[in-house]
Length: 411
Image (cartoon, rainbow, N blue to C red):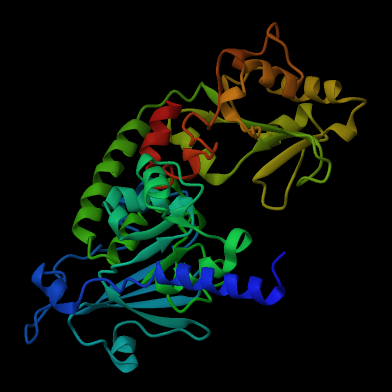
């Protein structure tokens, strides 16, 4: 057996080796100037492309039912940009490489720092970045920024990320698997994109939270926010305009007699609001159904048939508890009796191995059979059609940046 001192030495060596693998400092200033990524010495500079108004007027018009104020504000000066994230209460000053960073007084003239907000400085375009959440990776892919990512979540799904993890050993550590390595990786990056709920404690942390801004198009437009850190505004504007056109074209078709319900069954009594049959009324799901030209189920109407149907505080989740009935079978009968005329259901039951979850599993979970006569029985959909070999779902990776794909799938 090794002595404690030997083990401690081995750990120190491993940490040093891990640190060494993340010591690449990127290209020199002159190298970056040679490829026109940085401004040449003595040259004047001014950003020529901006993201414009955020959210754009087109998005606000298309999602007029989204009344929550946007979380992002972006202002431009000659050689720097100022992004303010009101969710994280942080402000990011992005200075063009090869130019002088502005003083606080100069930044304040463009966008004043609100009380209790934190200001951070970055040099753009970023050379080395990390995206800690898979919901961010769709934006990275759309902008073609894979080569700027130092490491990627082990839960990533897209082929490029799978290749990077296996061939380049570019897997991002987390605080549960290896907190020391995670901190080394984060520290070596120019910027770390994270959900940062409550603020980013890291000096190079960037709050990137498109799912916190209600609306499928509002969330997708965050491609412009990420683009600002890489001077990719022109590309982002073009990409988003194409997605906006595709999305709104599909949403113009109206077949509102077709109704859709997002359902789930949870067996664990400690989960959320207890064991029962759930109806999800999350805003982005309702919006997707409406934009696909279909009709959402109205839980208030269902309460006529299901007096025991209750919701959480914000009305995004409704449950018919098994405990209010003599058995699960009785509760299922009541739940689906009220939903009998629904045209299609989206089954959100968690499956550890999605490829093994079939229609028989669906019957078993919901106490149904292949002879059940409900209208939706011919249209049972799921969200796990694309996954990695580790059973991580692409639904949580590409959908945020590509709501048009999800809408097309639903249609």
